[in-house]
Image (cartoon, rainbow, N blue to C red; front, side):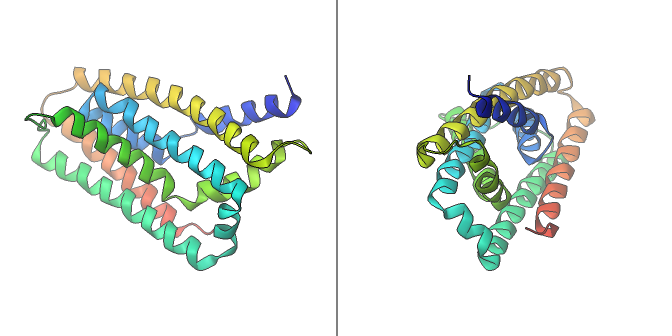
Amino acid sequence: MDSRLIAFIGVAALLTIAPGPDMALVLRNALRGGRPTVLPTAAGICSGCIVWGGASSLGVAALLAASAQLYEALKLAGAAYLVFLGVLAFRAALRGHAADEGPGALSRTRAGAYRQGLLTNLLNPKVGVFYATFLPQFIAPGQPVFATSVALACIHAGMGLVWLTVYGYGASRLADVMSRGRVRQGIEAATGTVLVAFGLKLAADNA
């Protein structure tokens, strides 16, 4: 195996397990929708990684890094979205957990979970800028840039999919045990706090 690839896998593994908004969102959806929402949420997040991987090779991420206004606009949109999700968690904590009922409810929940994961990732310009500076270090001279960038992003996404799914399934089991009364509401409120905090941090951070 190429030494560059081995190094990439090692660094990507550390990045994958580092706490962040992705894990907070998976936790939130695992608590609200249970196991059926875990995989779609993780898949949405990882799909965003693959998109950013391709964008970095096409120069889109570099353009984002070079344009302060574009970066700021996307950053604020992503921050607002995280705060919005946090507010939804707060509202759920205040109202108490109510399952979405009716025909097709589960499929809508899964689709919504995927969309949330995707948007959370795509609206975070730090992911794009990171890929634009990170991936080229692991592309050997002569290798096709686009194909290699997407392949590396897919490896990172695959690792993230496994980690977030295992993490989310564990969280959903915990939610089943603590599914009654104020305990669940407290977890919802704590998750909302984390999402809002990540949103505010993203808004405050510089490129």
